[in-house]
Amino acid sequence: MGRIVRLISAALALALTLSVAPAPVSAFASPVSDKRTKAIAIQAQLDALEVKAEIATEDWNQAKIEYDRLHGQVLTINGRLARNKTKTDILQTSLNTRADSMYRSGPLGLLDVLLGAASFDDFATTWDLLNQMNKEEAASVAELKTLRAEALVAQAELKIAESGAKKVYGVMDNRRSSILQDEAQAKALLVGVEADIAALTAADRARRAADAATHGGGGGGTGWDWGNPTRSPRSGVVGIALRYLGSRYVWAASGPRTFDCSGLMMFVYAQVGVSLPHSSRSQISSGERVSRDNLQPGDLVFFGSPIHHVGMYIGGGKMVHSPHTGDVVSIDPIDGRGFAGACRP
Image (cartoon, helix red, strand yellow):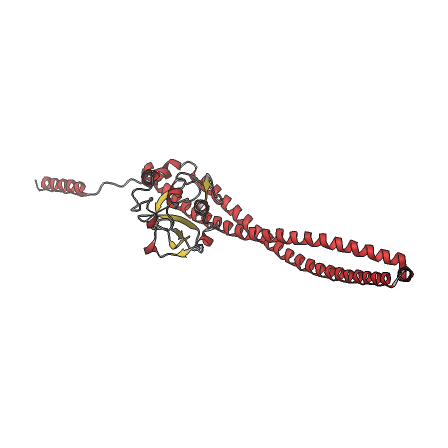
């Protein structure tokens, strides 16, 4: 009997243990969980590539500004050299002709001219003419020397400008290669997981679509009246920027259908008569600096260290910008992006 009681007690204890013990953990995660984990890891890699590509893009844009400046110098100097050569050739030809004439006529020819004068007036006139010719020749020789000296200076300047342009072009070429490699790597990472990545960002896409719908008709919802010019020194520029919502990001592009971040700002501000350089690092110096607390719609907001991204503040803590490869012009919060400063062009 005691043995039966012990067996019953043991069975009850085992049942109680089983009832409160945690469910056994499977040795393998679910396929859904695996996909999401992989998608999160790939998204982190894509984010890093986007930042790297943006830095390279703005490096390219900055180098392009310098290249254009140096190329402009080369064209200007070549123009100077061409004009110098034209003048030099004319003077050299003139002096050669006079020298040849003097060699052919010789001193006796000159004496004959002087002694052949019919009167003192003729003699005086001939003498004055010879003196004038000598002065002109002397002036021509002096000018020729000056032109040759100027040509040497211009050639030295040209050599420096061409060398600088070649060096900067090398930087541009390296950045271009880096950007294309990053884009190819991003595409390779996305193969087979596009839907999973899209699912991760579905909420963000929905928010962006709602923002675009809200602002597309004229800017409601930002706390700023687009039609009131007293509210911003650049009234109207935000409305112009919002026309390009949905335009595709393309590195180094500045409109009218595709843009990179600084290209969009340059293109939009050009339509209100403000010229901006095609580089976020240069754009931050293109107007009055503004603190984050004093932002107004139309101000340019900058991000990253080094600065590699720019957007246009539209109010309510949001901006319109062209984010990165694979994305489109959209409205996003300015928070969480490494705010680096702002300016008011």
